[in-house]
Image 1 (cartoon, one colour):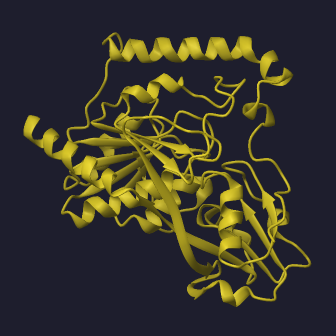
Image 2 (image 1 turned 180 degrees about the horizontal axis):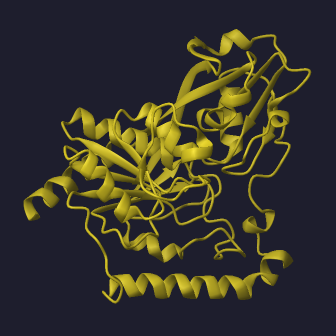
Length: 341
């Protein structure tokens, strides 16, 4: 049986309208007002927006924290490539010291480019660039790779300066919208009404909150193959860990840590679990357990832990499986964009 997570990955007050959340409401109201004014300024033309010159698909969310965007970005890149497109991916590079546009090498370090971009560069099979200014990052990517004919933005739903053709929001089916209040009183970056303008709302996992949207679709993360951090070519399935003392660690980047732990349980892996916040900067002591025969983690966390991993550390590779409707929607919208271009 999977034990309860040892740490909370998001503020507890985000899930209820208790005293802590109420005390933060004045700040939350100010945050919501500034966010709304900024969006209005771009949508009205008061602030200039820039077009990439090719279609742009933004995969983001309206809540803080991870919801499962990165696996969906990988799925989109592969979906488009199979259909003859030449995708390129841009990301903010959260946590990286530099903010200028630059390419992410397949062997890039998380501290230099961010954890999600490094994972994307390893698995996407297409150019991945990071930069704080997404419009400038797109320009730099396309200058280096003129063959790229569609851009996928990992996050950036609130980066309105970059014109987008398709907006996809990913919602964690387990957490939903939390208490429904803006940051910092709740998890909302933008109001739920923002979803009215979204092309597709992807619910990661089982919908436990009755999320309503005309284009609501489901997505599940699947995977059963583990690879050793010190030697990625060394793989194993869940039976390899039978009878072992297992510890599992996870940040929130796959939607929520408990989803990863539940997935391990479904694979038949019994373990002690340890949850960390999204983009947690792991230290050696965070993944060093004296009584562990093996320590399991997500691929995103593995990118950050590789520098101090040992032979006991393994990562589980997962892939997104969204409704077939999403592929149909993306194909239709891109076709319309080409005709109107």
